[in-house]
Image: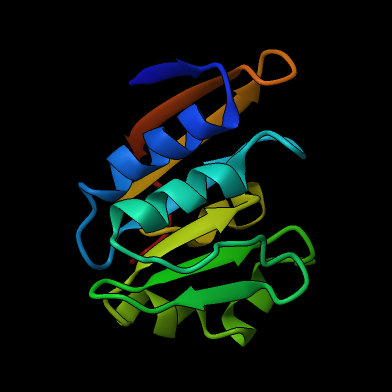
Length: 143
């Protein structure tokens, strides 16, 4: 599915639509350059999951946790040097906790993504315009 949004609010709304469809244990891999709208889309995921918290980028903390009926685990892999560091932060545990994992900079951990991951690619088309592609993808991971 491909969507084009004209502003940040519309990008958040598209994330919200996807968030309403996610079951516990879902993994959403976000791809896109700096400033593409990955965090805005994740804000929408949180809204769709019924989470009221102020979602911000976890760049310096690696992961932010947002409690809810289905919790949201928001990862930013930008600062990771490799997939080995992923397991040092308890990746396996997060996958088993029954929440939704939203992962920014997923390019860095593609081989560690579960086989049924939802890939969201956000491309900047202009100052506020974004092209968002949502698709299920399979990885080579063993999960």
